[in-house]
Amino acid sequence: MEKPAKAVMTPAGPSAGGGSHEVTELLRAWSDGDEDAFNKLLPLVYDQLHRIAQRYIAAERTGHPLQPTELVHETFLRLVDTRQMNWEDRVHFLAVSARFMRRVLVDFARRGHAAKRGGKDQPVPLEQGVAVSAVPVLDLIVLDEALNRLQAFDPRRHQVVELRFFGGLSVEETAEVLKVSPETIMHDWKLAKAWLLRELAEGKTNAS
Image (cartoon, rainbow, N blue to C red; front, side, top):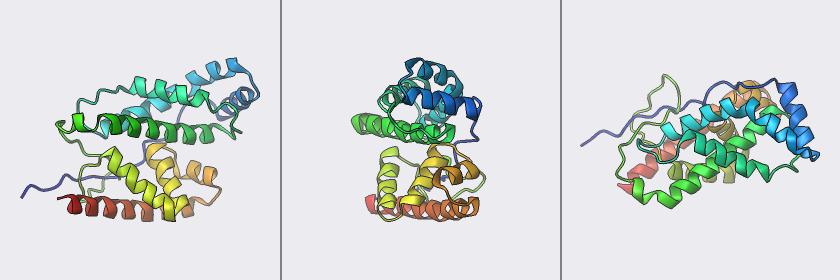
């Protein structure tokens, strides 16, 4: 019997980009109706969002028709409709952007999932340096459904996964967004990761 692919789960990488204070000022100016502020904001956050997009796409399968640049641009289009949001700071913006990016990819995957079945599987990084045996290669749709189940009974741990894995926020930045201690984030991340890996493994077994 062929062994299932191994997977490891890590956040998307450290945050980068423009200065936090400058980004925060532009976000607030944009919320107040300054359209030019959004144009000034984009270059400050583009590189990090592009890195997150690259990770998202690499996490699926080879031959993905959506390119990182296209994913970032689609995310920006959705962000335009959030101008009236009460933006807190750069970290808050990245968290919301990561959520939109997830939705873009899941929507795209649902539309073209059947056509991509023939692609070669690639492992999704779920924790650097920690290979988890008996866990299938992740599918964004399956992962999204598992995250929705997690959100139903533990909204904060769902947010921790969304911010760290999808948004690439550090432990400290995630703690800042959720207004809890870094120790709490580390504890939540560990438990949420274990729960998700178990859910995904059981889902694979049930589908076999």
